[in-house]
Image (cartoon, rainbow, N blue to C red):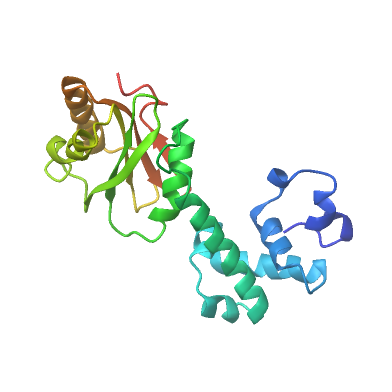
Length: 222
């Protein structure tokens, strides 16, 4: 925790730096700020992070849990509203007609969707010839295996929608996005199939917690 003097409080620091330089507790303190002193909000934010340990855990907190952490009804609702808006924004990142630009964009879209999932899910992002989004389709749910993520099932939506390219996305509920040997084998198999049928796989993004792994970024879609 930063020293609780006026020059080190989030609002004062913001006048000297930018938003991206503020820590997670400092940003939460600014959300909680209206209606109370800056020092009080800063202390409340630090208590929240002492209780929930991380921004990811805090993002899953319920109203009753926030109230139990000594937040007022107004402040608990304000924080829940911000978190809800964040999830909605993430869900609107990839919309039909929008151009795909990077693995980071895929991560930012899917991460909020995966927050509550206890099982692995596999998704197709279907693209046209100009890398514009056609459709986002969930292919399977359950532990990733070669039988569950079969090329026939993965490419069926792409063929039906006449996609020119496709992105693969799945999650690791463990929070570690590092690919397993099965992930690598499945990706290789899907990449080879896509080349044969003329639908180019552009990437396979694995999301784990607040991190992700991109096969394309690592040069593993050769």
